[in-house]
Length: 301
Image (cartoon, rainbow, N blue to C red; front, side, top):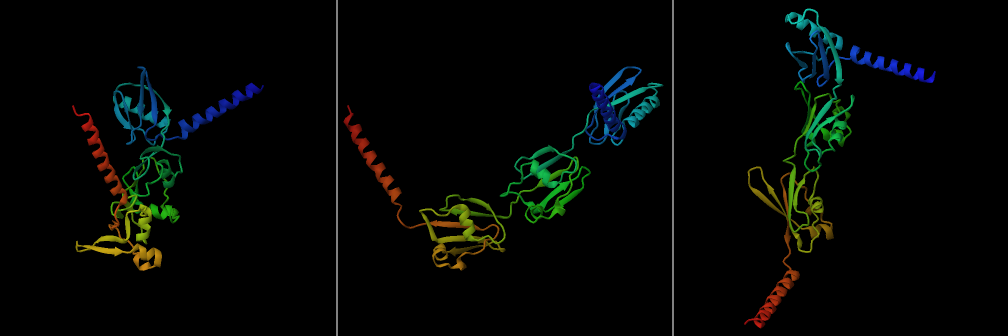
């Protein structure tokens, strides 16, 4: 009796699934269909394209997306009759694979590509599938979401990620593309006697001390009293602003800690104190060369 009940339950579940898929379900792009047409024994497998079409032997392309299985079977039969190929065609359509919704996440993310997602997922879910954005390169304010029909939705992901603005967290749809551009303007450069010279992301309120902290400016050869900020003016000329970090650190002179602007270059000069390490290495090389010369003279024939 237990096995009989189990078999009955599975049969009912299978019937309900078939009814849901073949009855209420309407075909969507990327569904894979198996089609058989009799008489003639025409067997064919096809994929519903992004445009909603399928391709069939003898009758060519026709629309399938949006139709139920029964509607598509009738439409195929009508086409064979209209083309005077078969008088009473018997068409059987089955779904081999259901489509899997995908979203493309491109631009300044850690793993750009195309990803499958679940119904109800949102922009944050898509961003998570791509491994998140690249903080030092992503221009979050100018991101956009493009629908498959070409509609573009502008996104401010900074408001979403940092301000909690859920109005930017749109529901994603099959075929969407989420794009985060690269920030090529909001940058500043730190060079000279720092441990990590390079290009960094500018943000409002950033100061010289913040910039030097990112670049690790505590080096033995850095002249902190002769730090410079080179800034380009609107007229194209450059301005050189000296910053005395000694006054800032030891005398709390906050006037030295100026705010940076996008495009600024922070440069830490080298101290004028002799580099005794370099001098020692140079003397060692001289001594080594002299002794090698003596050794070679001993072996001269």
